[in-house]
Length: 65
Image (cartoon, rainbow, N blue to C red; front, side):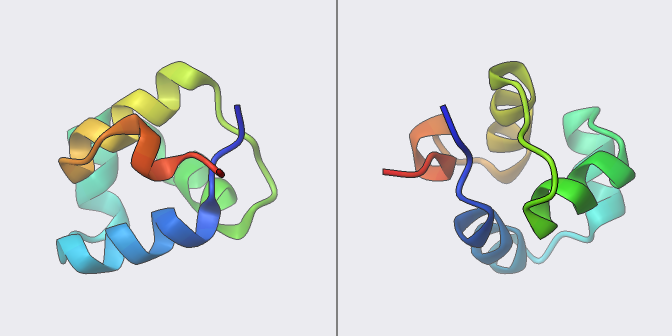
């Protein structure tokens, strides 16, 4: 399962949350979030779930189709 970093970037921007706020809400380190957003790191499904909950979206919204 691969995350769509473009979708993640768009949803993060729409949420009006900073990377630090997303990190606090999700429990995912800011460095990890930055790497995911840049596409240089592929997250585990648990991490995708944490990010989805923090952004108030479904996991499917973050997955490449």
